[in-house]
Image (cartoon, rainbow, N blue to C red):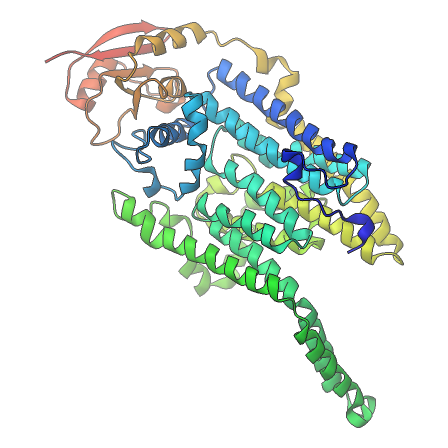
Length: 526
């Protein structure tokens, strides 16, 4: 690797102020980028909170999880079911490190902003990686493009999910990996396996890239040796070339770097082992039904029986192909020039092989972990093209243009992404029922149990014991909240909310508030 393109600073210097001899502008530029995008993401979250936007129940579920951790209790989420231990749903024990943030700011909004900070941190890391490998202008282009990338914006828009914690860790690991700082790459990657059960395979892919780096020179030498051995006799007279290649192979084998090989193999064992342990033992053991709740999301046996069909399934229907193409476009295609791009394959493969169409598209939070992989792969690819293309005009031109193509693609796609709403009136509109919603939340006493649909779930979850309305086997709650305009009900909201609640819970409920189609029911004392 050219010394002119690499610097020896640790990525943590960006956040902890260690001066590694890098010019001040290059040291503070990543900090500025991280802070700027954190503020942008936070502004989007604040507008959502102001407008009472609730894309799903996930943000409230994770609020209950951190609320439990902050109280020193097991991670129970009553929204999923009464006394449901959330580690029986997904394997994310590392989320416990975020509990102090909720303890300081006990609100569902705190989780949204916490995710914004984590994603903004990853912007700083990717910017740091670019600044130390490229000239300021292309590094800045890649930094802006990453901050605007569709995977990060979609994650912010759908509010908190556990993968937000994996994004900066992966960015730090891959940045260390491309700089050949093997122990750092392992230390940053290993915790990612504790963020979600499938991410152990992503961690294993990081280890595989390390092992591949260690043995690539040996593989190349073996190919040359085999080529010489099987050359026609007339072209390999006396066996000299074959003997020379054998000696070259032996020399390459003796020089195989042990550190990335050993560390990479250990990382592979850790990632694969933890994923299998989570899916086969931990999740079924903690799930109330005694099984992995998402076992039907991937048919491994079926894929092995029909590998050709499995390959076709990766790209059809069109929704899958669109995600592949958008991901390739985000990295200006040049990202595939780097072996780091291989780290994205486990996540993309399980999603596309799943029968659940919700995993196939570019929306929601599923592409967040893909973004640092793609963009650091672009940085690595540009460096490789410059280092190996001194005699190739095409390689030089590709290396020069790639960061700008990435930025153009990001800007074009961003016009259809959530941050674009901030420059329109849509983000600043007043929810006509905001006062009614706030009054309804305040009418529920702190600590009371309440069953609700989506509309007020984020507002209620930090002050009350929230259950999802209609969950089987839930005890009768003190209060029931029903919004007739909520998407929860589709076109068929309950005509008589009090009768509906009585049918669900076997208790008498009386209407306490009924305004703006939001009904608050209180359980009558026996």
